Amino acid sequence: MRILLTNDDGIFAPGLEVLERIARQFSDDVWICAPAEEQSGAGHSLTLGRPVRLRRHSERRFSVSGTPTDSVMMALRKVMPGKPDLILSGVNRGANLGDDVTYSGTVSAAVEGALAGIRSIALSQVYEKEGMGDAVPFAAAEAWGARAIAPLLDAPFADRTLVNINFPPIAAEAVQGIRVVRQGFHDYARGSVVEGTDPRGYQYFWFGLHGIEHTPGHQTDLEAIQDGYISVTPLQLDLTHNASLAELAGRFA
Image 1: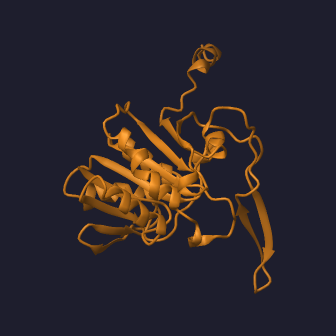
Image 2: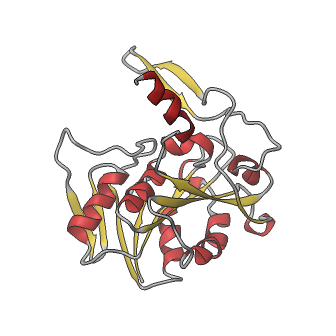
């Protein structure tokens, strides 16, 4: 089985090292093509206004001067000798839960794989304390990653679908198990905007992601993580709200 690894935290991210160790439990034919620098929050964006540079680090390890989507496209079209059987994106440093998946470069890399007809899985390690940087503990993802992926290797994936996996911010031995759940939605506006002044006296703004609220009691990825479970959520790329089609069509008749 040929596996492509990518992420949005960059080619040197600790989570990518964790993902490589997980992937090698399934195959020795592992390829890596990831952004040269962190691309968190890039979503499903492409680099169109400047050239994309490809750097080879070793025989099967490459970085791209662009987004996670760029990385997958370059891997499929320029790097790999053949189509991979599986794309794994992550392990992201931080949650990709609820409606935040629309911002996520990690999930979007898996989206690009799904669009190419390749079995694609996004993986993220939730953490609780802000400002941890590369000190985020990946113990839950490392211990449970292969167990979460294995049942998906021969599961039927519908066209243009992917699977989003999140690991709770607890010790590996404290994980309660795995729940297959739907995508949740946050109740309040996301995060905050931190205002400051740089050393030259100019005002700046920095988006924060803490303080996100949600309503417990529903069976979604948000509550699964809160309860100490790994969340597994199938996502589809068709965003059409079918229930609105007939009513809107009537307005244009």
